[in-house]
Image (tube, rainbow, N blue to C red; front, side):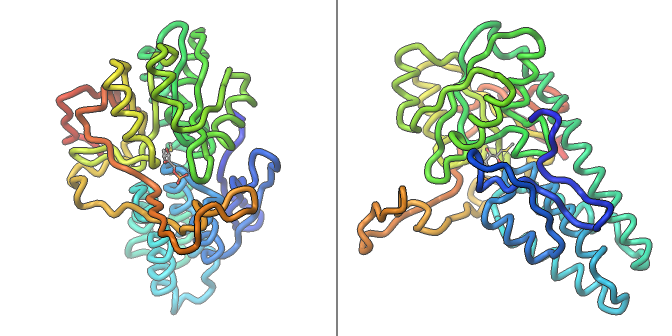
Length: 338
Ligand code: MRU
């Protein structure tokens, strides 16, 4: 896994290639995307997901729009509407809009021919820098983990959620490289099971010991003294909270109660330091993600479902935030981020 990419550009066809994450762990399939509308659909369906990978997807999306728009007359209009479409797909992970905007800025005031080249260069740079950031933050965070111990994680903040290597799982990979013996408890992450499908798959592939639990088991394992640290990724970090997969807040509260360190690993592209928790839209997804299991209906049809994809964890529950620029400790000051 560690050498694979999650999402990349195909120079031959001017297309975007990505691992279809909805099929894992039973099927490993790479898909080719040639239209921005199809990429938007892939983002909505979580074929590609995870904040840093969404940043790369947004960036390649604008490059794809530029590469595919043959009309110089309609160029600016097409790019603007494709960029808006991409940004509208998922509201919470700030990296998506960040990746789109960064590539848009690289094309500003350029004629189409030049803009296409610059857009692709900027998008490829974002993808490369994402891997570098993950490796650096992995290195920065590895010393926080015990020499021998068990780390609990939630959702998938691994190579599949990034260009490669991963954020939370990047720290675990780097710790392993340092010779530490880390076992991972991967919460299954209802309702779409990114933890049991993706985190368990990629760690097992790398021969890092991993055990899957149902999300509601985490507190009991902490009470039994079986968890030495919790480490998660982030979709957005505001001046007062960390936004990550629904269930993260619950783990942070439980970790605090049991006096277990709670770490967040994220690149600086995930910071939205000017914003507060109340400014952020938390994505709510379709009820069918919750109301069906094993091909059966598991919630009566007349019962409503609340399906928030993310939650917000107040910063006073966060022991440290691991970035490529270094490790941040309370009291947090994100002035220099981004
Ligand atoms: O809905 P998803 O699968 O995109 O949610 C992903 C997460 O919440 C990850 O933990 C987060 O993006 C960090 S990824 C390095």
